[in-house]
Image 1: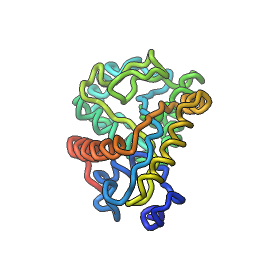
Image 2: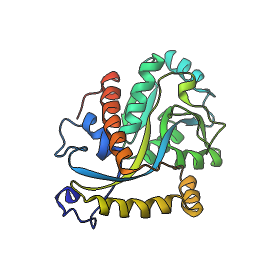
Image 3: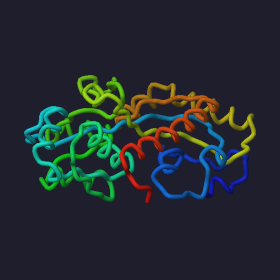
Image 4: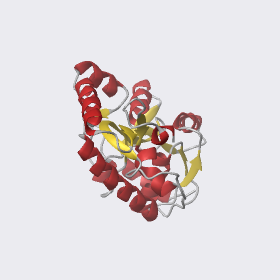
Length: 244
């Protein structure tokens, strides 16, 4: 709200995930702002998908095997979620896979990961950066990513959409200012951000935490936000989730 109330001079900006700029519209009963009306898009930053993960010793070695495992134990397989995106992922997995895993809320994905490792959860959805670290450590196994296509950061990990067509959930980050930000200010800020995203150093640092650059011009970002709002409304409705 501070950004919305600030002067449109480019000195106060919002660095946000898709939560504030898109998915909250669908996940919350009401929000005190309109993502399309109250912000001036400046630049896309990056995209971060989630990864379906189990313990390394879990009997399921693929997403298909996990679905079969859940079907044999309806209502008895627990899945932890620590974000709105991971909550929707569990609901969509249930719907597209025709299974009945029980979603368990956590105050953050790391806490859900701890309980997967401890054995009280069967699986969770982990952001790609943490998933890569867990897989390297050998304690967890990746069964699939939530984007519609494979990631160049982990090309050997299948997309869940390969077995569950329509599975396409990603998190993304962008920068926006208050409404009515002058075009010359937007253009100046966008140029500086785009230059940074194009550098090898920034790309390498983003890749290390599982984020792929998502450069977008302000007009492209505005269209993208509108499409994402529509997408999240559909996802939440199809997953039969009730806004909180």
